Length: 146
Ligand SMILES: [Fe+2]
Ligand SMILES: [Fe+2]
Image (cartoon, rainbow, N blue to C red; front, top):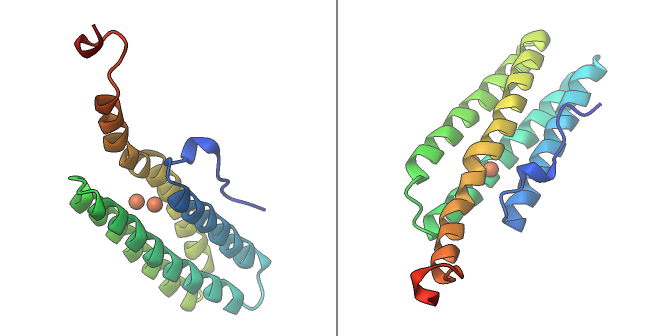
């Protein structure tokens, strides 16, 4: 059962980052399924390792994308990413300790955080590009076209 779904409102307008976000959501759903399956929790831990690795890869790509465009928001955005990385590490530790209920609770918190981060912080990534585009194409009622 999925705990999160990608919807068009989560699009940041950059195909590669949207693909990453879709995959992150898929991996999170896989982890949830493994946790709910019960029994041997090695599948859940394997899934959490995969999630941790993918999170680091994705954040790296996103931060590079931001840095290449000189976005002023980079430091604050990196800080948000770092907090999430730490929480994923905490989640993995809980799972390794067999604290399954706490791990499940934290997974839900991280699911909310991820959707909120993509829907708010990541979606703001496009704002400067859109602003530049607006500046480059004069609107019909702008002084430049009169
Ligand atoms: Fe992202
Ligand atoms: Fe981000």
